Length: 213
Image (cartoon, rainbow, N blue to C red; front, side, top):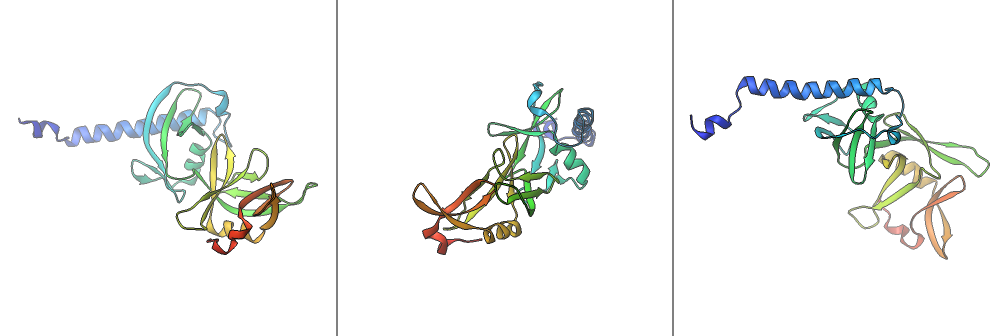
């Protein structure tokens, strides 16, 4: 048998690899459920061993993939999202017994809805994510506007927890821009949005003609 023959996986070895991958996913699911499985877990209090990376990815549109196949069960993605955290530039699923790295193309969550809540300090912006988290923009949940590829284009994000952000969908971003106003920041007129007592500048007011949404 030549080297090429030896390198070609047989159906048996392919099935074994698929079974191992499926087993790893099942073990992770069991660990997440054992850790609580409902709502964000206290991942900041856990320090499990690092078990490397797995073939799981969150696409820019919010779709979760495992082994290149979309995870169609919303309940399952919410289960994984409950133990997702960020360590530096790395995203990991963390349980009390292990942590496993995954890939995130942009932000792990999407902000899909926007409401306004009355408060003593002023109206507060409340976002709902695609994982059904409610996030009130303010201290600890800041809005961030990153420059896009084109002049005047902005990519809006809101911090959810543990270094994880939600990118605002276009519809939510349009609603946000409608609430925009100009305020002076360090003597410079800035266009931005307020949430409670906080003001989040988007760009200098002088550049409003360049805004692309």
